[in-house]
Length: 150
Image (tube, rainbow, N blue to C red; front, side):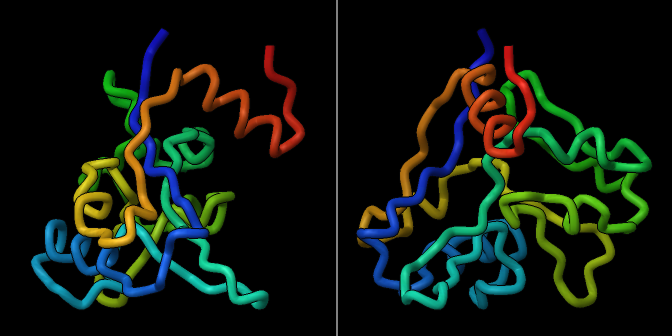
């Protein structure tokens, strides 16, 4: 079975300092702004609980991509081919986790590739890079979307 590394969020540990967002934007966009140019977003819901919007590598977006710019690597990570992407952002609208992101001035969307920089940057250890069997991950995600998993 194939394995894939996924960012797991522990909301009970999060203090909302957004160090994870800053680390991500610094690594991938060479900016320390975080927020809009981060593949992980920490948001607070109406109850005051923090929630992470980050790709869980489920792959549901792959079939939704009109130009077929999304694919799964041998490592299990879902990646976006920027040269094939036409910027339609169907994947952004479709992603059930809110893990596909767009930013002003950037045509193609972006997503987490489970590099782990956000995990290393979190002072509260609210993020963890955990390995899952790809079949288990797909079953969990499909169950949430009421699809049958064998």
